[in-house]
Figure: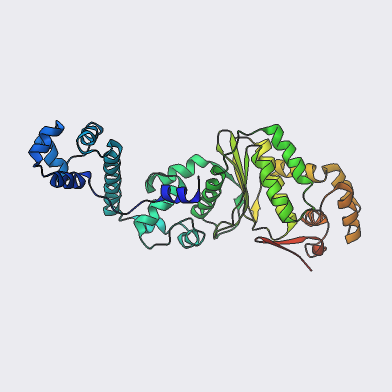
Amino acid sequence: MTQAAQRQSDWSPDWATHPGEHLAEYIEVRGWTQAEFARIAGLTPKLVNTIVKGSNPVTPDTAVKLERVLGLKAHVWTNLQSAWDLWQVRQNERGEASGTKSWLAQFPIKELKARGALPDTRDEVCLADSLMVLLGIGAPEAYKAKIGSLAVQHRQSKSKTASSHHVFTWLMLGERKARDMDLPPYDEGRFRQAVAEIRSLTTEPPEVFEPRMIDLCRVSGVALVFEKPISKTCLFGSARWFDTDRAIIQMSLRMKSNDHFWWTFFHEAAHILLHRGRNFLDDENAEGDGLEAEADRWAEELLVGVDRFRQFKTTRPCSAAAVINFASGIGLHPGIIVGMLQHAAVIPHRNLNRLKVRFEWNNVVVSE
């Protein structure tokens, strides 16, 4: 679909007219009375009068008769009626929106406006309607059920600033992008091959690895989505199933260095491969469980080999040369090895950080 066609399909005016107004104009132009028109059209005078007054709808049967007499296609009449009916529903909702402001207050409205996910308006009813579209719910009271249906396994966060509403919103931002990718059904074998190839990209710059990662995952039935973090989320990434046979790995790029970035990706990939049908969120400063430990072991085995890394740690590597030599031997970026050594408390977190690559949005700078 072209951008112009998309804009046209998304256009939704905040006004509508009942088709009876148009019918009244046609009757007047033809010089008929309502009774005369009713006889010609095979309708009752009462029905014509109530349609003109807007108290009766134009049904498909009536629309066909109007087409035959007036020449305006039946679908135009039914479209006018449909637009009127929808507008009436929205007007009724506007009159009943007493709790809209408090419901909206739970969500990061300003941030969503800033990234174009919500319209830049103060109209609370319009904002609520757009937010419900983003969240995939039919009414605010359905929000709780939608959260429950997602059934995300959450590492227990130690952060007091996290908000479940902000987290869910961030997830839905990613899911919206995933659904636009037109993914094929998930293929486990193909995804395993994709992850193995992605491992070889850790030494490449983002302009090389990012599009390749996305494409390799996409053809495997996994949407890889980089979604800028929003406030009160404290998330590194998420792995979940948004359809029965389609998955998404969503990364916040909150990670400031390449070791965090790559570890997050392979950890989430492990969840997809090991825990099909389950949904996971990974927080910063959070405590894991058995499934998280299983994903960590899988990621470590793929990246460096559990036994190989255990042996390397026993050498107490403290020099950049030792890390670079080990990383080169297994085809991995040395910054990843530094991060793993720091996490294992083999070296202090302040040591060898110059071997890492620092990431910024749409930009990469090497740390000093």
